[in-house]
Length: 258
Image 1 (cartoon, rainbow, N blue to C red):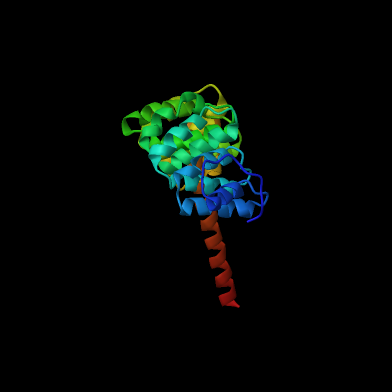
Image 2 (cartoon, helix red, strand yellow):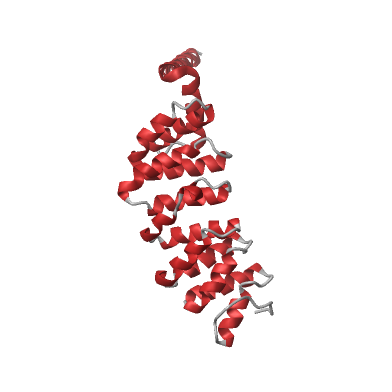
């Protein structure tokens, strides 16, 4: 591997030191291979270099490999160190710590997913917190989590809203009442997002964009008006099909007479 500037490490052997230093190599493929090597031969001495690199690594695939390498170490030593990163000043450190917790899946970390993280001003941190919260939440706290997550309805761009809808759908039926209340919100963005999420909860096969369009239609026409419009549209399709069949039959008869 290429020569790189050393990073902070407590690893003693020259070979392990070279591998740890490669985590900060200029070439992302070298960093990826280094993270793979660390995960393939887990050693507690790599804990600090891995955590430090998570906070600054620019490449998505390398970051994911770093998290995987951390999951290969004993949770007894990794969890307490990762918890400290949740309070880090650097946003990426917090986001990657959350991502790693979701990969480890230890429910003991549930208490660390605070309201501040779920409402973090940084979109990437918030959406990662939503995902890990759904993974770690105990059964008897799912309803409280749903109540918290619906406060974020209407936030951000399409991808952000889709992430929140997926989190709420993954929580299951406990979200129904929270979504029903949110659907009556005076903010049309919140109400539409809530209705779309409920549609996805009832029918996960519905696409997000289709659910949003349907939610907007219901908001405009009201539930009864939307239902009536759907019936009318279905009737129109049937009438059109019947007319096409009649025309086809007439054409066939005309050809037969020739």
